[in-house]
Length: 122
Image (tube, rainbow, N blue to C red; front, side, top):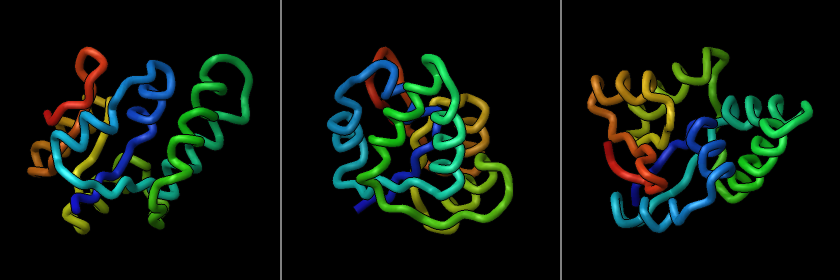
């Protein structure tokens, strides 16, 4: 089973534009264990506490992440924590953040992103 760490950008994107992303991911990596780091959940919680569309989208993203395995993270920036955890846990990362995706791929971490509403391996 492949661990897949979810970035807030990916969760926000699928919350805003619902797709069959989970089925797409299963096709890409096989059985998977979705993981949400504490820092990602904290970021989404902070975003959801405001007003407006972004706040509502973050709330939906939090609902999606409720069923994920939670992992503790350190105090570094969420992108750094995601990268560090992915490398140490030999996990893939689901992100819509191009900068993070490029950094992960440079370190040979499998990345799943969104293209035309589909979750695809980058």
